Image (cartoon, rainbow, N blue to C red; front, side):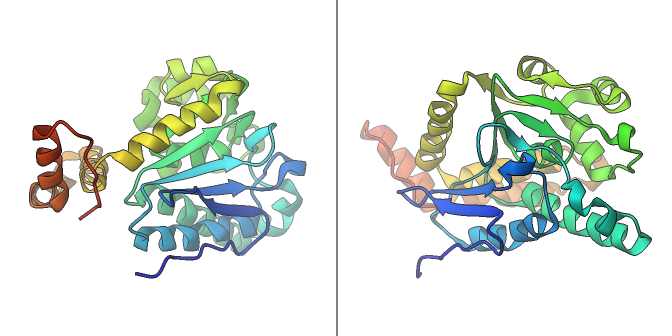
Length: 271
């Protein structure tokens, strides 16, 4: 299969591959506005993820913000009136943002939010849509919808409740208060915190782990966890059994067993 060439539809979203082609980086590139999300930035995400779904080499997609001030600081308010004042514009904006966020959430492979500085509003939504959230100790989090009079999506509030529980979700949403990285970790909003200097090293740890582990098993685990989070009557147990069966019938499982018996590092190929 010919290697996929990734190209963003806007210069306000950068995209690149690591040297080993296993990690795809999608970076929000609007640093003069603290990476506030503009329409073209939302629109760029979905096609990039569609390409990555087909790329057998990709084991991890990393979302980040350009510069050292912000991951994403919310919506680009310079487009606020144009895109959200009229009813039709609101509907279009919400549909577009929902499509991008659900595209991240439903992506079959692991996703990671690499957070520095401000992670506000839509930035929190992007981070919550990812599987893993790691942050530097200078990160700041807030959901300011109540200060702006915005309606908040069911999917975003469900993600928040799933991560932190209803009590903390109400606290953060009702007050719109800002919390630091340590509090965000303590309530379960993010996974791990490290110093600014060590953030890249922590990311490398995840990249190496995901590049080395069996992708069929990882993706099956992600899909089954998603089923677990559904209301009980909606869980597709047969689908879960099929995912597990596929792991045991894969070439990777045979490789994992052989490597264990031979006391060597396995080489998984996602087959």
